[in-house]
Image (tube, rainbow, N blue to C red; front, side):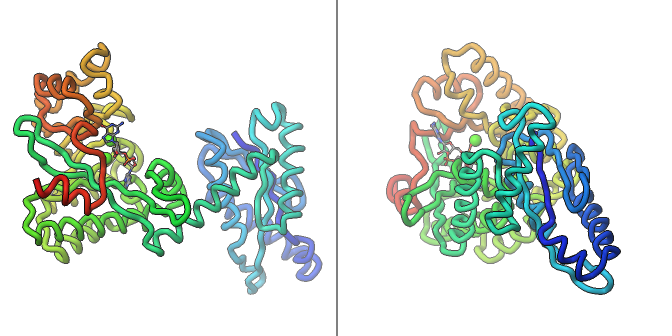
Length: 394
Ligand code: C2E
Ligand code: CA
Ligand code: CA
């Protein structure tokens, strides 16, 4: 967990100029505002004056403290109506991480306080960690976030495409669109290095919007040029389900690019079926009713509840590559792949294995009723140009 020390900037000025009643009112309103925006597991306390402490419990890593703290700074900087006037405030926050920065309340509080003073020295309206390395990490992250924000506007994102194959006929049966970031200095950055950040910061909504538009545009271009392709898969993150009108966007794309809904498959992970289940299910049902296909990605790695397969409108199950890579020797991988295969066949779902790299894996998959595959055995994800030359032309 993290212990945060929050101090409202220039509180004394408000007290001196508007009176103590106004100051009290500001503290009360600020407390309510903070309380309303905390997660259920967080604990806030007012130590005295304009100083608050906050315990952020259940952090998956130190980095998630960064995005929560940034949100807090935004909350602290929203104007506050006091006596009919908008008062502008900001806050400085110091962060101590348990157990690295202290293993008692006293030491954590002292170190968070020290960090808070450093945030004041930095010019206020900011945060600092107690350890310099953590502050440096936070800086790099903020920089990356800034760059990523610009990358979307500057059109530095590109889609690569990886073909999927029918294991029986050996023919290309479709493709998956995979995003890359063409950084002007750092070169081609793989999605694992920026998608998690985009998800945490909410940038995934703009990014995902671009991906969907670009994938549909490319698909229509290929169709117009006479290539026979019938299936494009697009990865969609959980946050896009909450914060974006996905149905509206896909309706627009189908219309604009004259695509058939069943040519588009959305790949989603099991987390969508766990958090906000009710709402996500409604969106999924609507997308499915429009005719879009739904695939469950990385199947078996998440909170896999098998009942999800019948409770949600799933068309395709994608066996995660961590299981495929163990084939055909590893006993546990064999058991898991067999189980996934018989389950999806019994439920009449289409099945595809990802991360297929060898002939032996293909033979195993075929003999276990899995007839679709994707992986380096055939091709990596490649640029649209290369995809056209090496996959579509043959
Ligand atoms: P994923 O959806 O599971 O995509 C499959 C990843 O496995 C891709 O990595 C692909 O290049 C890689 N792969 C394919 N075949 C093989 C193989 O035979 N062996 C091995 N070792 N790897 C193989 P990539 O392109 O780096 O993408 C990583 C992840 O980033 C994706 O995992 C997906 O979760 C995410 N991602 C990529 N593009 C998007 C996007 O447009 N939107 C969202 N939300 N996520 C994306
Ligand atoms: Ca995928
Ligand atoms: Ca996958």
